[in-house]
Length: 250
Ligand SMILES: Nc1ncnc2c1ncn2[C@@H]1O[C@H](COP(=O)(O)OP(=O)(O)O)[C@@H](O)[C@H]1O
Ligand SMILES: [Mg+2]
Image 1 (cartoon, helix red, strand yellow):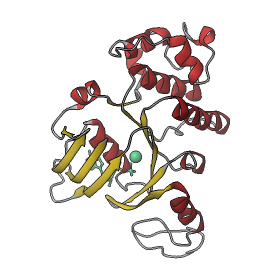
Image 2: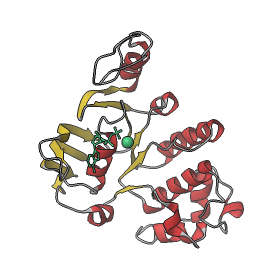
Image 3: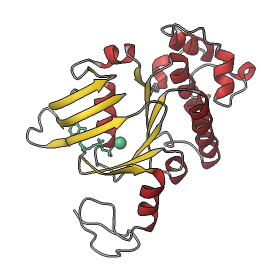
Image 4: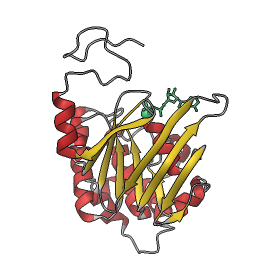
């Protein structure tokens, strides 16, 4: 469905420094992919390359066989590639129901926004008229983000560290929510996460370090590797404490 072929990325002003190096990836319909790996490994840059925030320095991106390498974020959104909104303050003064209606406005299917809220585990009558602002907890905000993705009926949706800023309780519920929507909707979901609970939801796990894919495989294979691995996951060698993922140098 979405394919990255030999994608590399250099950021302006950092010529010669490749943030992504020769990435080859295929994302299939209706699957959950979890991208994990050390900080600075290139995960967020990969998300931005998929969404069209960055265009690759070299390589190709194909959606359903059609090249979309040079398309920008808006054009890709129109074709069904998207991400959860990430800066809620932009929506100051807007109510949850308005946000969802806005998200659904480009979707030819007639979506019921009450059903959407229900699908992400929120009781519609409690939330429809709430303001999208800091009065919503982190966990509520994440669920509403997911509801906007469902409203848009995206082909592929990317979530960059959805666990950030939410408490453990809400996080457990959030993981359940991803699981439930996976059974009901066709959207391919790419989640960047460090959480085992999220990795358990994956059909495939992609390990990134140093701007490259260091491993990609079915969940259980990679998860077993991560959990049993004595070696440090950093791209540089461990100075001491190998076996406890202790201190790294570099
Ligand atoms: N806009 C940018 N300008 C310069 N360097 C960047 C930019 N974006 C990311 N990088 C660098 O690219 C590397 C990968 O970053 P990122 O994709 O954010 O990693 P991750 O999400 O895995 O932590 C890091 O070394 C980071 O400093
Ligand atoms: Mg990141």
